[in-house]
Amino acid sequence: HVEAQVAHAMAEARMFQYGVGGVLLLAILVSAALALNMSRRIAVPIADVARTIGEVQRGNLDVALPNADRKDEIGILAASVRGLVEQA
Image (cartoon, rainbow, N blue to C red; front, side):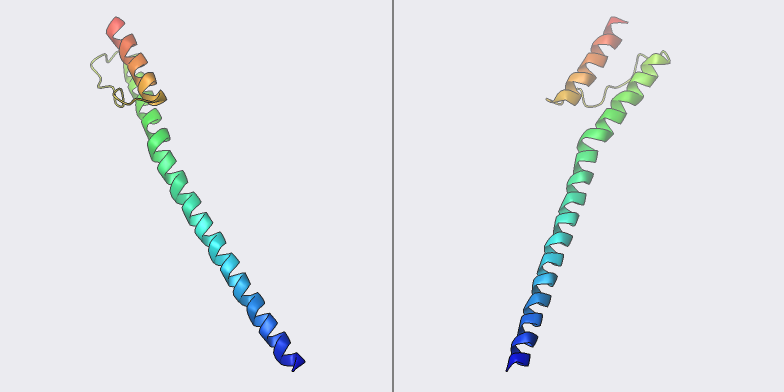
């Protein structure tokens, strides 16, 4: 009778471990997806603006300014670069 209780407790503990492992794996996958999304929404547009600034630095004032229509900080940065190009 005691052996059956121990076996049952061990099975429950194993199921709990699998559940915790599954939740942890799901949290890692969600975190990775969020990081990728943030990279695409922030890092890529900033790199685009930086490339545009490089073109302006090389004297190319006919560059298209990506992301200047955005309503966030990246849009403000791009609009500021557009203002500098227009003044040049």
